[in-house]
Length: 129
Image (cartoon, rainbow, N blue to C red; front, side, top):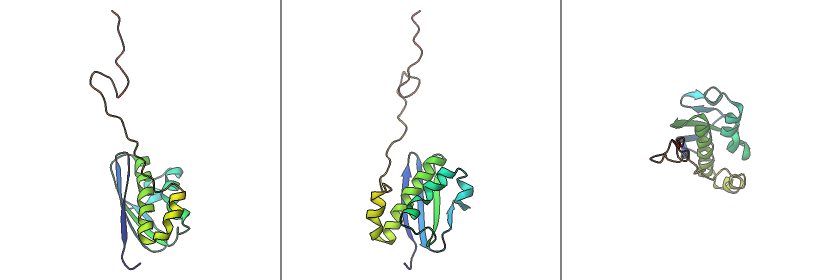
């Protein structure tokens, strides 16, 4: 791999651009180390999961630009982006990542608010008199 490879990951309102290079295993998100950017352990595990699955946690340097959404959405978008970038690097990773369920785009998002209602499905309190 002579050039850096890139991919996009999305989840809820979060969008991440992932750039992957050969390296020693550093992962940076918006200029910070991913452990500082995602202080919660389960979010760190989400970001590491595709690299652990193909057993290349210390073989690639990953740079992630994350925008929109919250911490969980960004972490899961980064997971999808890293998985897609690994396939660009080596197409043989595809069956491994697919079996682990890392290539599925989670399309669930917030339902829109309806007019005449308090939220998407919740109504205003009914008053008989």
